[in-house]
Length: 607
Image (cartoon, rainbow, N blue to C red; front, top):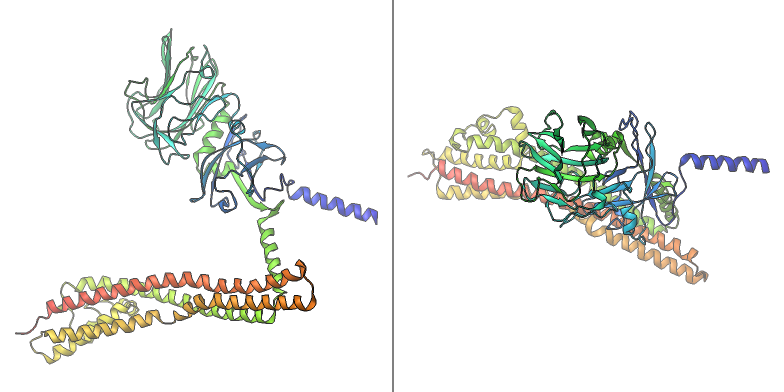
């Protein structure tokens, strides 16, 4: 027996280990996995990446915003070991539009190997990470990060604290949240600090997303000069370049293929102390055999200096400066992950939602279904009677709603065809031979197929009434005219046809109104009776325990749920159908006015 128990225990343990990691913290009720896939089937990054930051884009398609606090402060990112909390920064959180951009310190990313981390949420008591933890999203080698997310001077999201010295022009709806708009002058000034100081042969990495709106010659994107030394990144008629100025003169990368205008591109410059590489979207673009000269002091984004013009005109987003030479894999990872293309969805793959200590969403749904099954066992006869009546009302209501929806679609198609045909003859109503029934049906030339389609339109029915009235009076009047009294009589006939068509359009909608008004009352009746029976049973048995009261109350409330499930869909359907019917009636009223006006014009009162 002990051996059997041991085997079963080990089997259960194996299943647990195979199905997922332990739950990080029970106070968080939901989680989902994200997998970084640098393999050939994913991002296809074969070079080492090193320490990095991954952008997690959340939207209604991959995340349930309704289960999170309004500001997203209960989000926690945990490594695959379900122990190590990963620092993160929320650049944008919009619970109304279900959109968020979150920067997460990525676990170690190894070439050819997938890396998984968890996103936990659903803790109403949680508070946001402290400022120090948030700054820890970026490593110590990152000395400047501008997300351009808020108003005023851009704030440095790294630990270096290199906040810009002035406020640039904000750009709403950039590649990732907010961005910076560069106008060719009045540059954004980056501070001169010890963390941004460059020594002779300094290793560093400069990365940003750019979108040039107006290509120009020799446009400056980033510039830094001091004591005759200079370093400049620019775009010359769409072709990016790097330029170094030192005692030996000016050196610039060779001109490459121009970048497409009005398109976001990732531009990265990497200096290893001996040469400088320029990369576009993670791919090599140009190389300069030069080293960075010693420079200290401020830097400028968008022009060579505070009073200079001829700078870059366009948008910029996600500026990151590091004091080391990042590997090519890091640059490529940044470009793919942040670009938002199909490749980014392959590089970072979200998993399924899980809830309640590792239970999947499907498990939670099935658990709720089973709970409803248990509640239904406590229903009394009157509760089942109410639910049966609600079911009948629901079937009738939805049958009417579906039939009416199909009917209104047919009316719409027929009306569109009729209006198209009517526009061809309304300029001269005498084109229709009102003495010829075939000409009346065809509106002077419609095919049999078009006539069959128009028969579904109330406008065609009203038109037919008017045409018959005209035909009847023209046969009696040899002058081919209509008196004022005749026109008034024809209008009355048209109005009568309108009333009949409106009655047809509104037919059977009463079943939906009965469902809307009667469903909740029926449900409430079942609940009240169920509660009465529950309390009567308690009084008779003398058992006043939660276990004896709760099942009866829950069963009684199930009747109210049934009534609301009848009324709410019926209300939505009725509102939608009523709106479409009102539009159709307005169209008929407008047509009657037009028809009478045309009739008076082309069949004037005989003299």
